[in-house]
Each structure stands twice: as C-alpha cells, then as structure tokens.
Image (cartoon, rainbow over all chains, first blue to last red):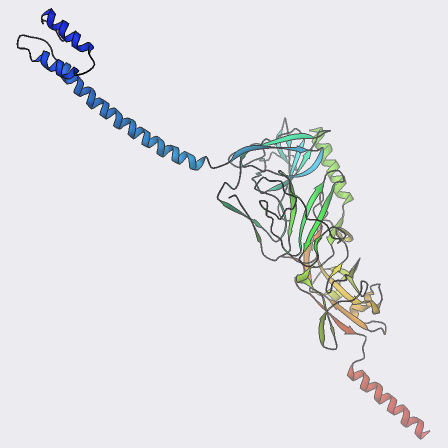
Length: 279
Length: 194
C-alpha cells in the first residue's frame, strides 16, 4: 500500500491533497519525491496507466462502435425486406388460391400452414392437375393414396384448394414479400394455360394495373373460379374489342385480391414475361 | 380414410359427368380468317351470319377424312372474327383426350348446315366459298374435378396459328365451260342438219 512508513502529517497532507480535485498529479509528484519517504509508489504511474487504458478503451469502443455501425448498415440492407402476414378467407369447397408470401425452404404446403384434415390441393402441370390431399392421420397422399410430398407452393404458383369443412375458414400466410423494395421479379408465363397468382400481395380493381401488372396480350384469357357455382369466370382481352366475357360481350377488367389464384391463357406460341417491382 | 375414399369417388363421378371435352371456339387478331374470291384475298367480313365455321375432328393429317363435331360458329361484326362460344362441349372429343382437328369455314350461300359431301368437293350445285384451316392437335378441357379449363382451338403452341382461306367453290371451271360450249355447238349443228 502506498504511504506505508511515511509520517502521519505527510499522509494527512497527501490525503488532504488527494481530496482536492485539481493539481492532483503535482501533489503526488511532490509527495513522492520527498527523500525520507519509503513507500511502494505506484500512484504516479497509475494515472498514466489509466490514461493509456482510457485511450485504449476509447479506441476499442470506437472500433466496436464502428463495427457495430457497419453491422447495422449491413443489417439495414436486409431489413429492407418486408415481412408480414395475410389472412385469406376460404369458403367451403374449391377455391383457387396463391401463396402471397415466401416462407420456409421450399414453400411447401406444410411450411405455409396449409394442413387441414381432408383438404385437397390441385396444382397444374400444363395439361392436367396433380392431386395431393392431406389426412391428419396418414399425412400427405397422392391420387392413389400413396404417401406424397407436400406440394411446393411458392409465390406466383396458383392452386386449387378444397376446404372440406362445412363453412369458411381463415388461412393465414406468413412470410416475406416478393419482390423486395427496389427490385423486380419476372414470372415466365408459358404458352397456353398457367395456374398462377400474383407474387406481390396487392389488391387492385384492374389486374393489369400496378403493382400487380399482369401483361396485356391480345387474345389472352383470365379464368377465375366462382366458388358458389363451381364454374370459371371467363375474361378475355382483345386488342380491338377490349375485355370480353364468356359470351363475348364487353366487360370490365378482372380485379385481383391478395391470395387469389387464376388460370392465365397465353395465346402466343412463346412464353410471356410478367414483371413486378416495388419502388 | 373413409372420408378420402368418399372424396375420390365423388371426384370420379364428377369427372364422369364431364366426359365431353370442352373447347373455346373463337379466334383473335392473329388468327384472322380470309376469303379468296376471284383471286382477291380479303378478310372475311359482313353482317353476323354471313359466314359459318364448323369443328372437324379425326385422326391423321388429311382434314377431308375428318368428321364434323357438330359445333358451329358464326362471324362477328368485326371483320375476320368469329365466335362460337366458350366451354363448348364436344361429344366426340372425350375430356382430357388428344385429337387432331381443323376448322371449316363457308359462306352462308352454301347453307347454314355443314354437309359432309363438301369435304369431297360436292357442293350440290351451289356457289360460294369454302375452306379448311391447317390441322392442329390438342387436348380437350373438362377433365377432372374441378374441370380443367376449356381448350382453345386457336393460338398457343398447339392451337391453329394462322388464318385460312375460303376459296370460291361451285363455280364452273374454264375447262367445263369450254365443254359446255362444245356441247351447245354440237346441238346447234345437229338441229341445222335436221
């Protein structure tokens, strides 16, 4: 301990001086340079060490802060993705749905929460439906009752969903909005029929308007499903005649709502692009 | 399990009810129809009912060997366009099955009802225009439950891609006119000698 062996008045002086807030260093220097004082003196270096440590600490804090800021900057890039949920009311019987949010590794029906005992999911392979059902006891089954993998239903893929219940049920989709802000996604629409949905979740009165932005092609058709009548609602676009119904009478453009799926008919011999972007 | 079996049985029954294939019998701007009259090619036009269209189905590549499917269409007021209905059932084209098909086009002067003799070039002395589109191959809609969408006869990768000509028919050819002239001359000579 410093001050051992020193006269009491020195210690009193030192302690008295120590209580002063200014010129602490000078007082210590004076006290420590007294010739008759034997003591383990560490005080005069302590302050320097403290200074060095403080400097190092400050530098460390600054470095950590810098890295944290950098990390925060990187994090802010990722935080530009929009994550949310959408609840879709599905009536009893068949409906055409489309997963509006990206979730899970494969967006499998099991990952997006589509597991109702007795449900059916029909996906379109270009010429016919692929049938998969879910049984609470047996799991996922194909049309031959053989075990099957749950169908992959990423945003953009439409599918028929059979609600086996007597009444409507709510299905909540959770995940990430595709595309993210400041990016564009392009969905390829093959020649002929495709069962699709808008990858970007949005409600619009005209399916060809932003942000859903379904391309307008002469001779194209949009088939939505009427759950009440179990029939398709036919809408065709003609460059000369505009939008037409099943009787070829003029009608307004079909609307689009979040989670809705529909058949798109591409009349061209080649595929068409469906581009969507967020500002 | 019993529930799923019931669902599948129901689906099978519903599928059976949709045994007839479904087609959309209409064209668009890229599949315009044209008529060739006196070597002049023009888009088929006129009041509704001026032109008729019929679906022919069969096998092979010769549409003259096809049979009429009983599905008609008439022209629209817009030149070159016709409409015979959406989700039209075709009895002879089983839902979900593949077949070859073509579309016949004729003027109302030949009559509203398709005659199979026309495929053999016999128009019963009537004059007008008749033509057959290129042959295409397609899979009819209506399979499964819910039903697969109706097949579009025109457009896409498998539908009819281009328009077709309705050539003038029933008009005597120059050679037959010459023969008729020779016959008339012979008759005159015979009468003079008499």
